[in-house]
Image 1 (cartoon, rainbow, N blue to C red):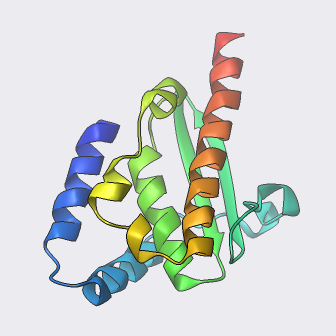
Image 2: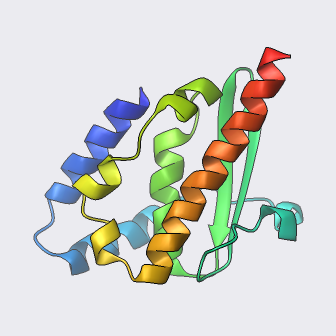
Length: 141
């Protein structure tokens, strides 16, 4: 499934809920299905800077696709990173780098987050794309 198709799917899923309390509950549920990072990879170099909560993100290249795992000490933040991982997991680095994240605005996520969580969301996207940049360079060498 393409990144765009996954984003469209998420937009449709979030549109099913009448209010933001239901959407938050859905995000919490998504966080529970997050591919969890191995305990040994919960290191300072994998912590996303700029997040209100602790968020660890790891990535590896399997074939030509990126596989992400993460964890957070906060349930909402765990839901946010789960949305991003669902979008970008098992995609090529170039597909990740060439994608946009407009779907986040379309589901209304940014406007319903505190300023610090919104900054954290931006930092999560940057870190995902930083991993994609590194693995793209590795594939090109």
